[in-house]
Length: 328
Figure: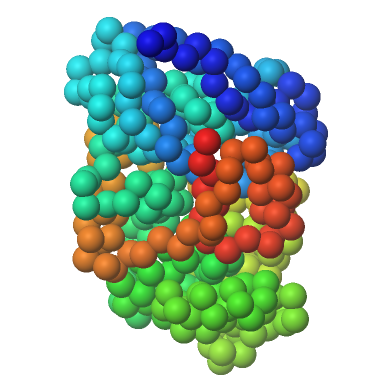
């Protein structure tokens, strides 16, 4: 029986809205020396996929969308040593894009999924889980007694960051868009939920904290929330900006930080997972928490790859809850 030479994929030939996502046949890529070919079982959806589709992040056309996923290795390059055909792996980063039936991945970016871990959960915890992990451990090491404001508490990172913060003994406030999302955030441990569409969240935070504010704000929204995040922070507190869900943020006037000597940092995941050793360490710790039932990923109903335009539209409208996954 001959091996397939074509695969289904979401191909982007023009930058633009959801309509530029085309579900088409493309050639299955060939392995490079230090790469593996993964048969995709699950692909993760990230807000960066929207910016990539729109051309905000640059890049050359055409390309296959998507950067994270999990599946079985079906081919390895000649220089690959510690990974083999048949391994089931999770990964973030792809040479060819993951919204497809197959993806080429640098071997060092893959991590084997333990038998006890469901592949959907592993995918949901990988990019978003590692993001929550480096935020809570490296950017602002959360300790017992800290107060935290976490935006988008029912989102892919937010609900995991809430769990990590509570596991460390912090008090957690979170913003959500509606009561359904607020209820979910509460279930994952949030002490206070604020409906940002109905209330000024910064006023609510200051009321709850008797005017003091919180030790740290984890802000994945950016443009629409940054001023309120700064207002919500206590004297000598920290604002951690790690996303731009509401659009690319304009420059900030530093004098806004001066009154309370607030530290503002803009971070991203890649420097914290820049080699296999770093990925291994974070995955091991996340899977340990998962197996101890201290970290439970929230997954939206899984959609088919052909539904990508609708999925990205729902994400842009903030109509989603939990981690979004696609299956080929």
